[in-house]
Image 1 (cartoon, rainbow, N blue to C red):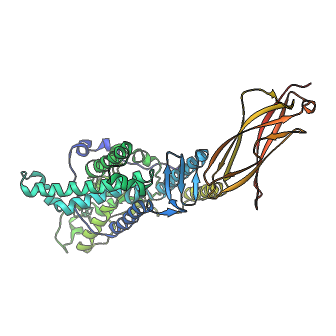
Image 2 (cartoon, rainbow, N blue to C red; image 1 turned 30 degrees about the horizontal axis):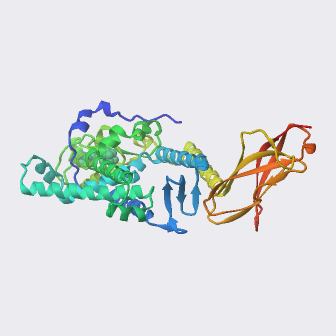
Image 3 (cartoon, helix red, strand yellow; image 1 turned 120 degrees about the horizontal axis):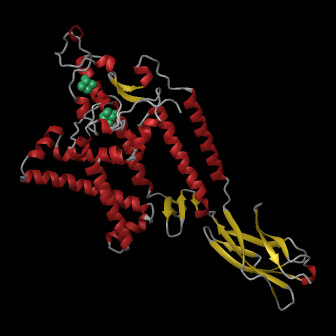
Length: 463
Ligand code: SF4
Ligand code: SF4
């Protein structure tokens, strides 16, 4: 790790402001707002649309809790694949780490669900109650019919979005095509109603009421992001050397002669900030990297006829007179490691066995059967994880004269799990030791070189 850059902690600011004061953001236009709208629309479509996709007669993405299976398009993950799912999470976490080292909190600003839903809820608030000043006035106004109507409209729309979000989210765990009619006809079970209610409330509170407090006070990622950033990470910063001394001036005046910098001290960057901070105080832990202050300041610079970028994506090194140094060795090494992890994971997923085979020896040691042979009992555990029906042959090897007592050929549907009890016997004269290693083989009948082995022991009494 390089030297982390200085990120001011919330505690060095007026923390009470965040806990008590309501933040009314001002609307604004700009490049990064458009990027966020595109990213948010894409993610909304992905979240609300994917759950309705079908793949091979089943929901394309479904975490089927009752069957303990996770379907994602053509792949199905079983509890035995937990290691792979954990590996996917680790790779995602490393990807987020890489992104943060490179470009700061872009995840928070553009793609984190909390941010995406928060911006949508803020837009609903603006549509229902007006822009910043109108909302501030409305807060202080007495409860008239108009105020009640505006509040009702806002909270009604928030709740509607929250209900849709909750049903969609629950639909990733319970088939959505069954869930929706069951909810509408009140045929769904109590747990379905509970989780829909729970996630409705969570969405409504998080995106509508808590908003930036989730990012500033509750999200652990925001807390340790400062240790990931280095002097070359892209961060949103105010250019102090260009902006100071800040102060008002008339359009076209020779402000430099008065000792002023480019900042006109209009407060626009503060008024658009969803966490209510002043970026001119330096990089702060409360900054979620949304770039709203860049858009707001750029529009002011444009009106004043100044160069844009007083607040911009930059690095601490560049702000201190150095070069913007995006492709640094540390980042290249992390990038190479990330690519290697993704490729290894892709290979592990693609090559994982689609049949699981195991054997458990029954507790009893051995017995003599009607033919006078020594007999041991076992349970074969077979799972067909593939998407097609398969026929398998079962055989046993390891001792001369072993007889398999049980089916030697079995059929398993896609996704079927079988516990097959069977026995193995041998003539006492052929047993040289009281305990011998034996191997069960599972082979596929047609057009396949599948051959799985499960080892066990055969016990008996040596004559
Ligand atoms: S300081 Fe700027 S980038 Fe950071 S949260 Fe506020 S508006 Fe967004
Ligand atoms: S928007 Fe730009 S000009 Fe206005 S106060 Fe912020 S930094 Fe200064």
